[in-house]
Length: 42
Image (cartoon, rainbow, N blue to C red):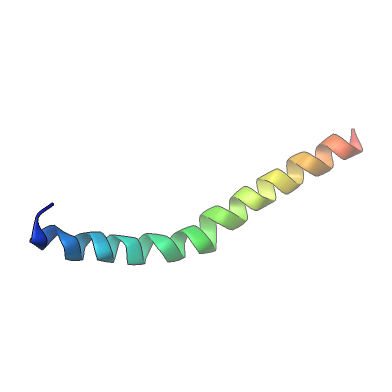
């Protein structure tokens, strides 16, 4: 890895971590919740 690519990796991580915690994880939780409740209702 080149020393000039380290800041790009850090900035990429700083951008993707909040996006994961704000959008991806709650969406996955909701999908699992919906599947579980559909299975219980059926």
